[in-house]
Length: 143
Image (cartoon, rainbow, N blue to C red; front, side, top):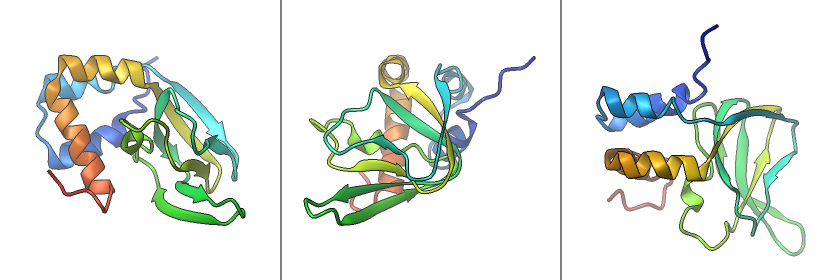
């Protein structure tokens, strides 16, 4: 039985704007992770928590939002199939937003430590990830 490539939607997104070459593209689907299903309204991580994984959405939708002290929610981004929420949180002490399932959602969770190993082996993948963050984050300068 052939192993399904849960990274495929994300890889397609990366190669839209970066020519990675066959060997580098092959390294991404090889990332090990775990498929998980969440119900509508589930919080995948909360403000201030540092998730150990980044996620590739397989189906459904999620949003990144903040919740004020009074309980008001402000949505900053909506994520759908192929998106990898959580990449923009890297480098922060703790994310200032939560990740919330807007619908029933299936996500492939990849340990950030494993992604770091691939990035060390293939620096072009790091550049592609940075471009992906810039494409999906409106306030990025696109460098």
